[in-house]
Image 1 (cartoon, rainbow, N blue to C red):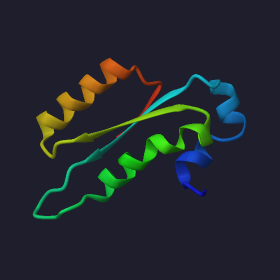
Image 2 (spheres, helix red, strand yellow):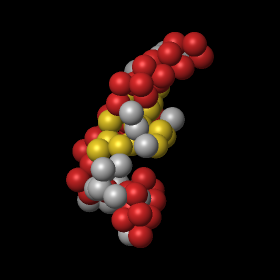
Image 3 (cartoon, helix red, strand yellow):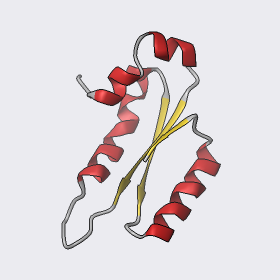
Length: 88
């Protein structure tokens, strides 16, 4: 399926240069301001399914909508997963 920009950005020569062991962390935010869903949350939840298509291991993390909370959660995930790239 067409997953859009992230797959296109990691396809072809650029992906070959990175090798198949690339690890990518994609983050989104939980809903806020009374909304039941946050589009970035939905994107992050779908991202791991693209792993085989882009030839990389993709993990996702939904972050709280607070400056300190988001940073702490993201840092924990970076330290735990050890990504080569972070899309936040």
